[in-house]
Image (cartoon, rainbow, N blue to C red):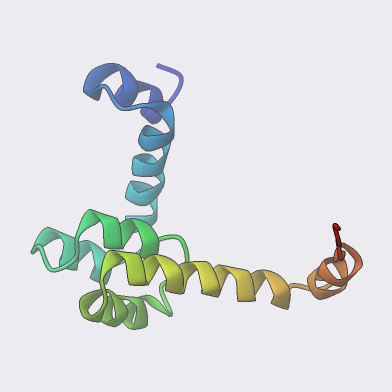
Length: 108
């Protein structure tokens, strides 16, 4: 098989996007022991973990676990989206690029 995702497609019947997402989450969990523990004992659902692993790092893991325990998966998705957007704007030159690509459209 070319990749783990291809094996999941073949063996489990997932579509390729779902298989890649499951592989991404599994690989990220290797670096996040607290989240891995909470999933194992059933305190965090896969939907919450999928969202959290997009932004969690070992130094911010505890904060995201607390958020995961307090919020629904949909609320976590919104928080993660906002976090990723703010991180993108904090990158050097990103705010200038966003400013350059803004536009206004008016139709009558």
